[in-house]
Image: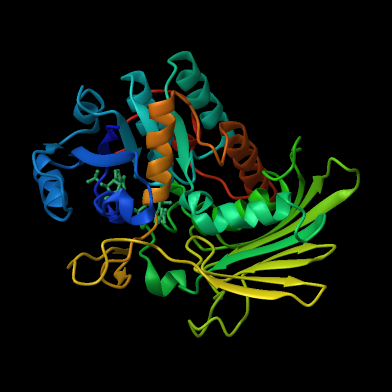
Length: 394
Ligand SMILES: NC(=O)c1ccc[n+]([C@@H]2O[C@H](COP(=O)([O-])OP(=O)(O)OC[C@H]3O[C@@H](n4cnc5c(N)ncnc54)[C@H](OP(=O)(O)O)[C@@H]3O)[C@@H](O)[C@H]2O)c1
């Protein structure tokens, strides 16, 4: 049987765009995916064509790929099946809309948009145009996450009453970022919540919401510590989820640029995520976005620790991937390919959204983050909160 080949366009040339494009190179058979393949056929930079050319030089297996000096040219390339949007959060609405209006399917980095209104608009357009649209919350597509959800839905730890989830990385902003950097700049929708906290929320939602047959949106209480630029540098969220069997389940989601979820880098601080049920708990270790270790602890005395692989071409391949100057072992994947595989299966089979996070769920999470910002008094400029289109942000 011939394989389905998904032809990717990469929109933006920053850190994660490079990591994602690199992860499309390993043969999917190395992770037991036998019926789909990926090919980067084009990349675009908002600054210049030569920047896009330089970007493509950093990625394997992109011979013949086109380089563009504008996102519009990429959106109009008839050879591209799907566009991966990897600009700052502030730009997602404008960039995704450009792609959808041009008739392109889209995988968009987290956080999906700046606010829920923008996402509602994008979903409406994608539905009208019968296009695929998915938020690139890669962690949801890991075999580790699939297993954790399966442990919950199969009743392994009994009814789940509470999940703690943290993603905190100590990077004192004043020493780490200039005030115009996307991590702390309100004009680029910076802050701990939209960048890191979304992973804490991912674990809360995929354990207390996705696993319910008729999930209901949670109520919320928030504490926010602000940075001098006005963004949140530390946020704590208490979420109360109505459960289908009556009663509630609690989610405690935390995120910070000030303290570290794994201060010594050896997991001495214990798990970052604890999913607690009547019969035991599931622990997941830092970092919440790319965990490699789980521990299942049951009241009957069972303790099962598991290390999770990120397959790839292996040692001797001369290939490495990573992010932010940190690389995995030679030949080990970053793990972004699993969400890419999901896009390929969806497009092959005619599905219009991701299997493990529906657009409706992305929207509920976006509404939750809107409410966190409202309670915490975190505001972004009107220019990036609007649903007007087109708006020139650069
Ligand atoms: N999944 C993950 O693990 C992960 C990790 C990090 C980040 N992310 C997400 O990926 C997105 C991008 O993050 P990143 O770390 O890759 O950011 P980055 O390194 O700053 O890259 C962003 C890119 O966006 C483009 N861009 C367009 N307009 C821009 C503007 N006004 N200011 C800055 N950049 C602009 C630039 O490329 P061109 O102009 O050349 O197109 C730039 O290189 C964010 O949504 C972030 O949350 C995800």
